[in-house]
Each structure stands twice: as C-alpha cells, then as structure tokens.
Length: 211
Image (cartoon, rainbow, N blue to C red; front, side):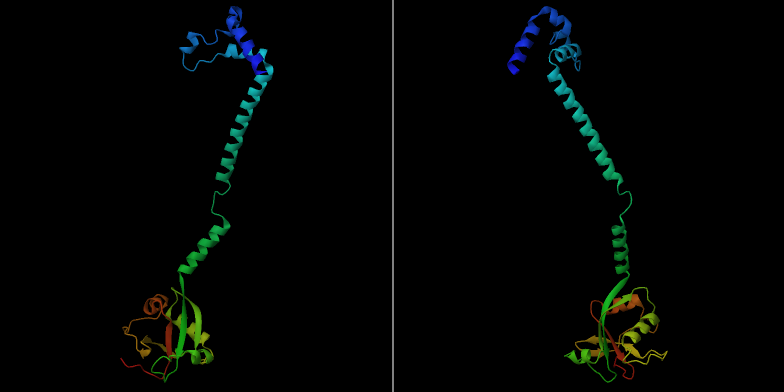
C-alpha cells in the first residue's frame, strides 16, 4: 500500500497536467508565502486516495471532539463547587468554636489543705478532680462559678447563691493566694491567662491562704 502510494505520487508529480490540477504542489510561489496551504493539491490527493483522506479527516474530527470534551470537563470542575462545601463550612465553624473555648482539668482542694497532695489518687477517689472541663473565653465570672459549683455538686450546696470556693495559685505543690487586684474578675479570658497550660485549682472557703 505504501509503495503504491509513493509510486502514484511520483507519477502525479512528473505529469505536467496533473501539476496544473494540483495548483503547483511544492512550487516556489507557495513556499514563499508563509501559512499558505496547497488546498487544491490536497483535494486531488483526497480524490485519488479516499481511504487515506478519510482517516485524516476522522483523526482531525476526533482531536476537535477531544478538545471540546476536555474544555467541558475543566468548566464542570471549576463550576461544580462555586461555594465552600458543607463539610468545609462545618470544619470552619468547629475551628471557630474551638478557638472561643479552652479545656482545663479542675482540682478541688479542701478548706484545711495547705498543699496539694503528692498522690492525687485520694482526690480522684473523693471526686475532687474533673478532667477536660470546657470553658468559654467569653464566659462571665458568675457563669464560670456556677459551672464549677455544678461539676462539684457532691461538695457544694446547690441551693446556695453564694460562691463557696476561692481560686488559688499552686507553686511547688504549695497553696497560695493569687496576686490579683480588687477589680480582677475570674471571667473566661482571665482564667485562661492566669492558669496558662496548667490545671485550675480551687479551694473550699474556710481557709485563707497566706500572702
């Protein structure tokens, strides 16, 4: 097939009449004009070799369709999520909520304690330790006080409106009064800042820590 094609092409090129039909394939005139195509020659070759021309047309058609399909897929991918997905919005809300809260372990010391027990097993046994309590940074002092009264309901009178504990500072297991001014409030921001990365220590009222 390829050999017949070359032979036939050679005969067409050597025939002056055929060259006139083909419009001067490979002529210097066509070669001197950039971008000019030999459409008449291509038409004649298509007529003489319809099978080869048909394959070429189908290939160009397939390339055009493939380009259209790729463009369509790109458009669909770009337009399929014009807004953040529901999972993304939920994740952002969770992160925002987490940034507005913090978690602390809370330790309840008895009124007569002068230091924190080295072995906290007794405190756990007496339910005087509550792990992973969630506090809000925006909570007021009374909101935090009420929360602590609630989690230590076995140790506080739930019917009393009085604050029944003090926030204390612990240094090397020794209990001390926090060095804060009279205007200081134990709201969420203050609580997080004061206790830092450690737990929150409170003490039942009845014991005044030495300054």
